Length: 181
Image (cartoon, rainbow, N blue to C red; front, side, top):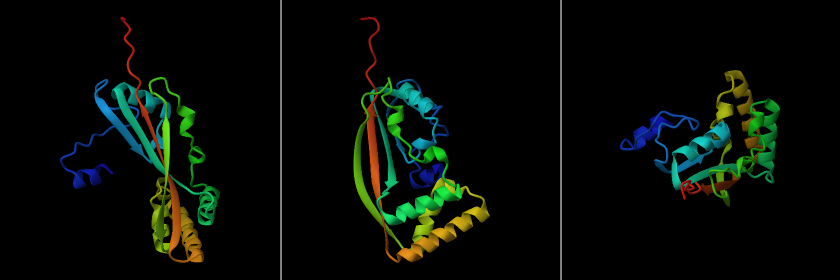
């Protein structure tokens, strides 16, 4: 992803770091955003590190898409991925509120938006292949899973409606307390 960023926006500095160890001075960052990766972090350590580098009043923004479980194709794909063992158990039912309130941040605010993608069976396969834990499967396991995804897509016909709920969370770093007052 860093290579894609550098190609698209060469004037933007991309740093090599992890969420748990950022190469920035204390209080030197005004905002941190994370999209569709927060569940991969060591969340308590990352939140402590975000709090360290954010300036007082600095913002934290988190966003990701969730498939709509009321839609038949999502239920079928979720069952397939869970049954295959591809989905790490820590990703099932990820709950951001488990980590909030966090002492360094004000209240976590949430907004939700709906959106829909439309695919043919090939597009559905490509979409599922873009999921990190699917892409990381051994070649034979991945091909078997994707063949089953294609079969689900063909059964649903084209175009396949693929609705999502985009979940967005924001919190501000709490102001520093003046210890000398």
